[in-house]
Length: 411
Image (cartoon, rainbow, N blue to C red; front, top):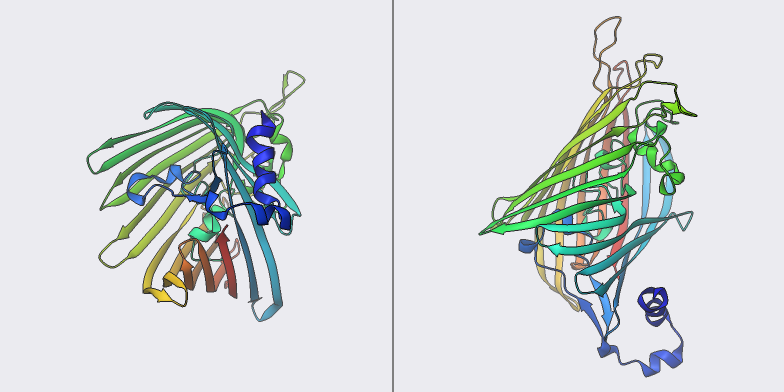
């Protein structure tokens, strides 16, 4: 069964000998066309990708890559030229039988230094309003975590809120339900999952602050649940054909190890997050708007210093404006886009207990971008980022600037 659905098609697609190339009719290959934007929500991002299918094979295959050059400096100190092969991602989708689908996403980061299964789940499609999903699940917090493919974005770097407040491409083993409902020009969707929980890395990490992305650094979360507590994660989304899509999501769970050998060694300490996201396209101008805001609450032990924030928040907004859209060379749908991203993060919204003054552990950023798309699936992007970083005491901010040139494409 595994060979039929996964191994055999991979060998078929990836074989590169001259003998095979000479005997395979390229017309047998076709690209699976994703649903139109009006029929999908952000929660459908894992399936709304270009896949290559062949004949009656039960598996569709696809992927994307990201690579870039950048030159950055902080307070006049430059890191010089940096060439980076960010990631190569492969995804496979298979219809096992009617109403049962499997999809997986495997990512190779930094030249295969990090290899991870980001998503691998089996979907049982019972009813449009009631579907069961189990396996390795992308937790639906915010919008970016599920809709993170590089070729979809105009910027070489992922949003700070999705990498420094929330764990980017965060997945956990678990089960849950999801569904959608249509009513005229409105569409509603929901997801609710229970998965493996958080871990002590929320506050026990190398950053020296409350840092939720550190939970990804414990690979044993895929084989067991360290503290025996579950994480609940849910999302509600509503989309109007003209007004855009808005989503509200949340998760909550116990993050610390509070017992050992059946004996309680600590109080249960909870970490919760809420996020709101929005996206829309103004059809008359072609302008696209994408935004996300997240708030995090973490119960911090009294023995920890005040640099560990109990309250955090931050977000971003992207505005993309097409400048030129016309045939160019042999590309029929070439497009040049101008983009800007505004970002703000507050890692610690608390106050000093001694003086009641605000703790200034925050950063802000503006990114300008120019992107060339020979097709909707490929982008060449030039970005300039200016970032300010304040320390705990609110001293004059650290200033950094980065210019980057990158490519990203589905294949």
